[in-house]
Length: 107
Image (cartoon, rainbow, N blue to C red; front, side):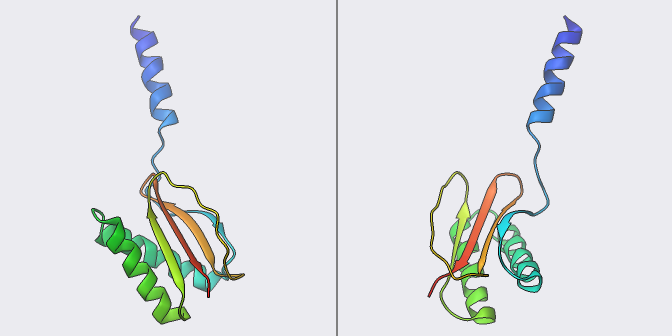
């Protein structure tokens, strides 16, 4: 019995991997913009860990200043999306496990 319980716990910990590093799922940005955007997203999510709305607002406003107007940002868990965006202006990533960040430019 003791070995069965140990095996169950082992399976549970393997299936629940938490990513503490930024994990980019999709991006068509150039490398320089992607790196800046990813660092900005991580900073915003760490600064406003309890308030996704403020994190999204910080990301949007900073991207507008750096790369021109009409950026959009969604920060949260458990959402789906279908968007239209300008080519080379999209980033979809995860941070801190299941926190998803989606930023795109659409003018």
